[in-house]
Length: 537
Image (cartoon, rainbow, N blue to C red; front, side):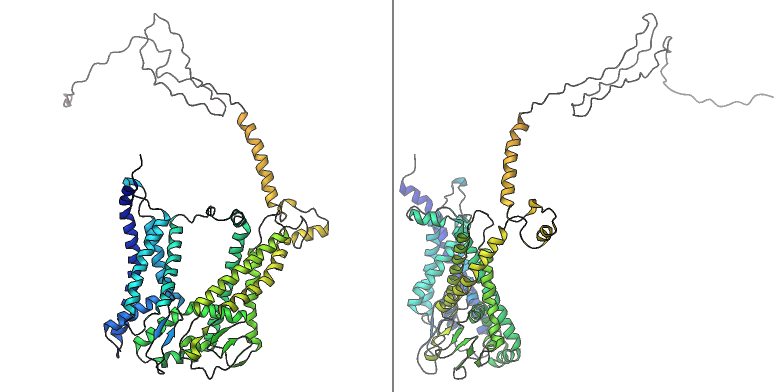
């Protein structure tokens, strides 16, 4: 009989409480890490603006900023509160990794042995999220008394969004990354469509295109920083004169490297990024940048020079071209039964996935850095997503169709060794021709399936063991013969498929022609040594 619901709930409460505590611990570890970092910088600063309480309030604000929450800065020259909404994307990894780890530990807390209660995935997800959000709400209230409080409306949806996504990823990984069917409430047509392999290929090809764009963006930023190395070094040294301040600037620059990567990809795609309400940096030109109150920062030294574009800036178009080629290459299935239309549709879906990924990254990397002119800072998400989709769609579809046709071309058609053999009249090796691998393996499988029963039905005749026999020579009964011990029995070996061994007679230890009574041998009890006497003369 199953236990009543109340009893089951009482047994499950310790595991659920442990999951809630794990979520709260994940949030506390993130807050503690940032608090230690801020306290160290505050102690090493020669001119601290506030006491340790202000440093702890600032740490809580930075923790909320790591979730994408906008902070508000009140101590401005104009007296107008200025929002700070550019989130360092590297800082986002801190709460995501901690929350993901808490969800994984909560899912693996009980294995069902010794009466342990195994919580379902939904219960673990809910418990860990509740614990994390409880600490997040307290941090929001605590940061309100600091120099840079968080916007309550922004924190109300940014913190839960990061917590939910990270917890869902942790539970999914702990359960073995299942990719089973969708729930029953999803329409049947949608479930059948998602089960097709084209969508997995579209996700893979879209992710490959986004990675190529990001790799090209960080390469572009690195080359520009090396080109403007003197300006970047000067801004780093003149921004502050104390080593603690320079260390803080260095940490901020490292945390903003993923943002610079996305901004470089947006610049290569064409829309570029905004540096205020009146200036946008694109490959075609960079205008009205002198009137902007841009802060002195090492990464901003990599901006292109003011003026119209040049062939050097236009050359960044190779980055989206490479992304389009990558999407088309990864969208092709290695199967002959796939049609050209299916391949083109998969490439188009991959371009859509690439555009959506770049739009999300562009939106996460941008935000306001102040009011008025600095209210718009970074790339515009819908422009970057649309440009990425158009670039990859225009190149991925023809490339995917061409690659599909090349991989599934008839045997003996094409350049290289096969083409040379066909032109010279030599026979073409159809066994190694491209596009027939699946058919070859199918033929081998069918042949093996037909041969195995025949091999199994062949009777096997057992081999009888052969005993080793020693010939015995008859002896005259009237003649006494000295008895001799018999040899030990020889073990009979197991039969082997080799030819049967020929028995070899074992010779007797005493010759058979020996006759006569046995000679008695007296026992030796002792020995006496006599001295040798000289003979008398």
